[in-house]
Amino acid sequence: MARIDQTPFEIEILELGHDGRGIGRRDDGKPVLVSGALPGERVLAKQTRRTREADLAAALEVLQASPHRVEPRCPHFGVCGGCVLQHLDGGQQILVKQNRLLAQFRDAGVSPETVLAPLVDAAWGYRRKGRLSVRRVQKKDRTLVGFRELDPRFVADLGECHTAIPQVGMRIAALSALIESLQARQAIPQVEFIAGDATVALVFRHLEPLGAEDLAALEAFGRAHELAIFLQPGGVDSVHPLWPAAPPELSFRLGPWDVELGFQPLDFIQVNAGLNEKMIALALELLEVGPGQRVLDLFCGLGNFTLPLARTAAEVVGVEGDAGLVARARANAQRNGLGQVEFHAADLTQDQGNAPWMAQGFDRLLLDPPRSGAIDVLRQLPLERFGRIVYVSCHPDTLARDAAYLVNERGWTLRKAGVMDMFPHTAHVESIAMFERG
Figure 1 (cartoon, rainbow, N blue to C red):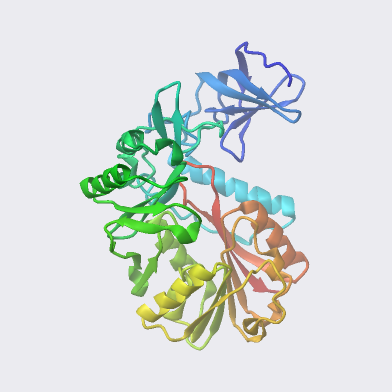
Figure 2 (cartoon, helix red, strand yellow):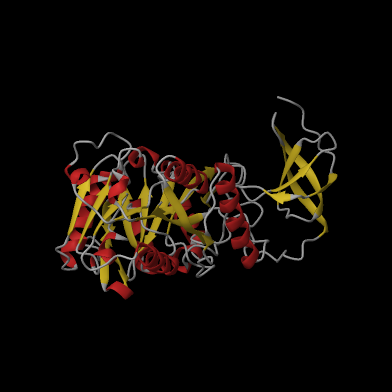
């Protein structure tokens, strides 16, 4: 491994990288990625790592500050990797994300006719789902609970988190003390949290059976903080309640569509409740679904878009790879009295030529794929049957790739696209795009 020069150096920051680090250049042109630095700033930095492609560094002092720099709200900013943009004004954060999306489109050779106004909502206390790492550190003689540090080899030593919902974010120190008190403290690698409208749940992953004293301590913590406690001794199917023994159902309501969605503690839900409602409303507006039309919703999950769509469309078909989510989506359709919805479990990265839903006629297509995108299923679909496509994306690189396929190989037009701030203060970019034939 090449030796790291620890001598502090000055550098001018030219742009912001995809991971939230400022980018400058050495005299020889080699990029330097500086955590805690913003475009237009001059900083004193110290090198932390070298790679063939770039040097990594951390800002020690801001010598010339950006006018968009703000004081980070969280005392752990700069160490915790949970969010990396707290030092940048919120209005600029979303512009950075918009510029990244548009740059990805340009690199792919496509461009939206209209750039949508960014969607924003709550910037603090919004994260209703997350995973906290747990590590017993002998040198500190205590248990750390938090997100990974900027250096992901380490768990951040958190006392609080301002992006997580307060019921969890303001109790991280108490959670750390709880796990430190357990006999099985070294056998708990993570704690997941998830919140419905009425219930907040913690899921403790444990690698060995828990004794009676530990179970009692976990139950007492749940009672004291009004949190439902679940245990996970194995895979996803092993999750079961500790307290209450019959916990209240986890669910959230989508008020504008009079829809309620129930879910399980490890299910995927959109993390920002307020932004989620705005996103659904925008997706439905872009789809322009008429009363007699049929909609195909791919990567549908619990029915987050499917069920609101069913309030307008003649029929909606949802397809999802996780059979458990499909089962709960069906239950959600039933609980909301939506009979014009059907769901199918299918791996959309594989051949779907014989799938019954593939042969049906549809007027609209909605996609909300994972980071890997939707290229595999797009190549299989009879796209000429659809009048409009709306694509919700959690990764601008794969959205741009798939948009280029739709435009350049299938003859579609990218009418509108924009960003949505699902994860404020992070470098994560959520976006939406609408395509029409021709």
